[in-house]
Picture 1 (tube, rainbow, N blue to C red):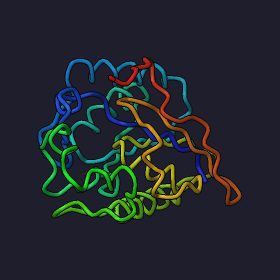
Picture 2 (tube, helix red, strand yellow):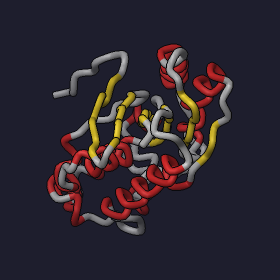
Picture 3 (spheres, rainbow, N blue to C red):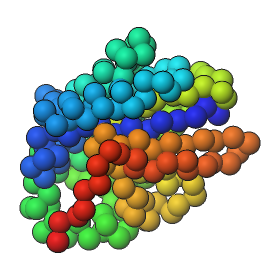
Picture 4 (spheres, helix red, strand yellow):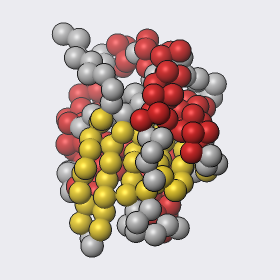
Length: 205
């Protein structure tokens, strides 16, 4: 199976202001996000990447574009790499959502959670892993593939491949413009890098 670079999109105003963008259209990278995307392209300029796949949402495409330009590779859009369908929660503030009863389950028992009017974490995990398997089936084992998409889907995919129970996937991190690298061969997964990014931001108290 190819070497996978799972890249989260860069910062946007929803990330900066603590809002859940979900699948809302028209969410673009802010200035910091554009700088992050350019830094990613420069960091990966010498990487032997043979293909770049992206979620169809604008913030993912805008993160992938500088890398695609750097390597002269076309971006291939894949619906299966879409953000989690947060249903009625998208567009709302995290501060407000944390007051809801469902929030505790999201953090502690996500395997039991379905977002109101949206999908469950289990459905999201299955969708993303099927998409990654489909992408990999079109490549050789020696290939390096970049997939630019979203935090929860990246963490859910990593949890699946390393055998981490779904209820523990929130223990993983995926910062804006971070790189997570997976190598899967002979039926075994090796998490090479998790949440590699260029600055370390400490959580606010």
